[in-house]
Length: 621
Image (tube, rainbow, N blue to C red; front, side):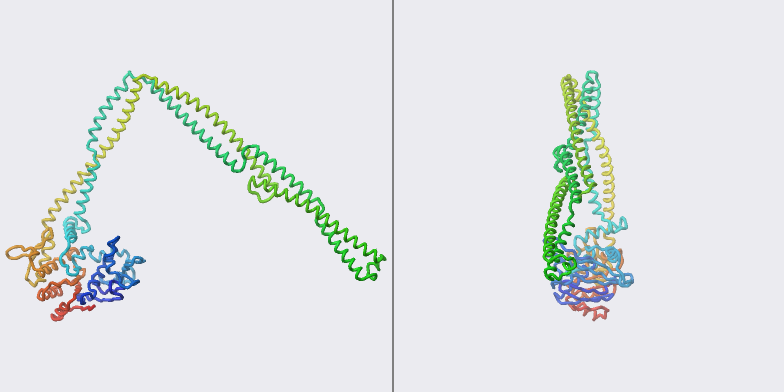
């Protein structure tokens, strides 16, 4: 893996910032507060994400610390890298409302990477964030590894020793087995077998006593009869409840329709049929009565008479009517006036009679529709609708008849129930009158039944105990195996690191130290001709050199000894004097094939590389 470039949309103080890296040595120079640690953190955030803490911790967490300074700025960017001869781009958006917070684009093939998280894990050689921060990425003024890294490295080596799989965790497995054993042990019932045997002995004694001739079986017969009677009473009560519910439902249904008894329905049916017959009679009479048309005819005749009278009056004696008929002028005037008045009188009379019949018919229609509305929803008065209304009313009468039949059945059931209760009371009296031995028999049978139930439960518990003990034995075997493996790990822990780290320290120190030793607790010692010197007794510069070698060795180890990931240093050489810095940088430049990115607030690293004619890429912030 090689980092190619990065682009910051918004991260801390930076906005629209671009950096480009070379394949080998890169020195990123910037004065204090220039943003070196921000770039350093941005690279890590692109690789591992940036989660926001919850609660009070969110006020001072990393997400808040590197939030863009400008309000509304985009929080995120992208990181380009090469992997197996292909170029990729990681895109992240750290805003809370991001629609696509994380994606990886294959720039070579021009398409998004499916399963981006798993692919990135492969690119990072399976390094967790803790392993990354303690090996290939060295933050400002922090060379030593923290406690979490010690545990993770031990687990890695242990699992590679035993399974060849770095995804397992022996410590977690051991803790898990202990918890499972504790949980299984808590569910054991150690007294179950003893109690079961004691109960079994007492059950046999009780069964022998109950089967003896001194106990009569009459009590059992009475109780069976009493139980049958009790069941019969319950059945009859259930039937009675069903009838009561049916009666109540029918009564409520009829009450909602306004029918309190059968006579109200019969009365409504008579009212409906009478209203319909009256309506038909009135309708037929209205059709036979003098039609309103006649009233209009007489009204028109009256108007014509007025017109003729006006015509004769206007033309005088020379009008055509009197001249052609020979009727005198006065007589014609009087005649048309009489015709006009007579026509008006007849028209008014006919209209009055028609209106009276029509109002009566309308009144009958309104009353009949109101009666039909009490039965159901009808839109008109037709013979079919009247028939439907009668049919509905007849069905309501049938409901009253059914309700009466249900009431009769309910009363009959009451009689039967009372008789059965009297019989049950007689059984109870007979039971109470039995001798003391019958009462004892009942108690003995109850005790026997309870003990049998207890033993049935105990039998299940014993079977479960056997399963639990089997599981505990299996856990003990697994834990013993883990203990044996742990001893093996302790004896061989340093072998993986000692060789690689010793080779690295010799090159970094320019041969001042040629080997170091690392024990199973991750304690580091310098090998001298006379003794092993704990690293704590060395100078701070020497300690930084040793931990640098240790980090490179541990980083390669946790990459399965591959040399894939770039090493990133954030002011990691601040404690180095010029001699140590020269030795370390030159050795790294010539012997570490991984990509190197050095963040520094001094120009001495760049000056040293220039003075020694080493190839490097200088990036100034």
